[in-house]
Length: 185
Image (cartoon, rainbow, N blue to C red; front, side, top):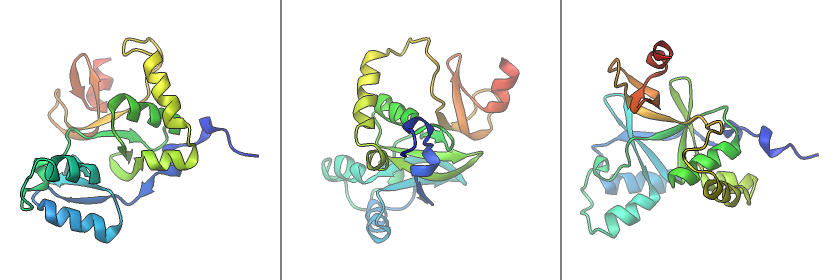
């Protein structure tokens, strides 16, 4: 008997061992890494902190379409801040985040460590209809819904204590780390 979709977690479906590179690499070097490793996503690190994400789509829409030179640094085409999801979240909740945020790749964290990348392809491999269902869900439910929110995080500096965290959440219009959030509630 097949397991219920509601019980499948992000960690069970994600691609493990994401590639983390310097933002100083050129787009040519980045593209070469994608090809050599047969991957589609690079996480950008500066000062031992994840500051951005670059996908194969970025090479098309930001480099080729804009006519950028191949020596352009990856930090110039990365998306930031990086939206992340905890490893133990449900797959259907990840699909909702991806649909709402209009992203196709979602880094996965366990504690303060990035352990994988979840892609739309990973989700459709398990449940071909889940992305379409998430799109319908997003149409029906507005941002102001009182419904329980799916946990999602941003990487960056806490606006209260100034410490870097992979687990920032929005609270009263500020990006706040878990420790500061506990003291604010």
